[in-house]
Image (cartoon, rainbow, N blue to C red; front, side):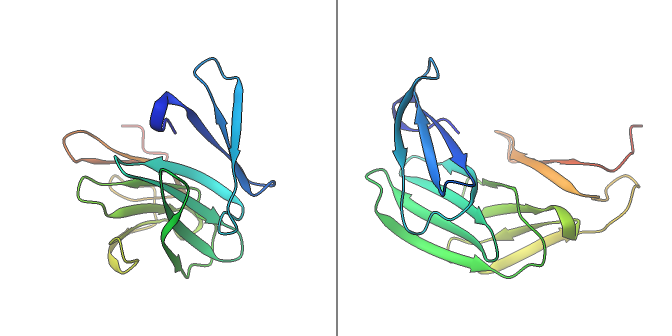
Length: 149
């Protein structure tokens, strides 16, 4: 993810930290915090950095730009979550690959709704991985749905 100062923030899953690189991909520093455990994805809004950790407990942590923990919430799912995004009103949208679903949480970690229908037909999700929200607010999910038509 591109963060403040146009630095690139890269999760180091096995090292429990985030590497911070400059625009030429030169190492700048590490971001480490006791709550950053097996990070798999990083996102930013104007005020905060969000880190998705996905080991035995799936957690989204929110840090201010100085690295102080603001909020943390865990969610109970069987499978690893790899990707997430943040919508324009601050909801956290997580793709749950092994559960063939996308779940939307509010900033307090309460589930608002989920999109879940396993299958290969149009509109279904089968192992959703990448996820993003367009500038118009449309949700785009990369899924192995084998529907290329």
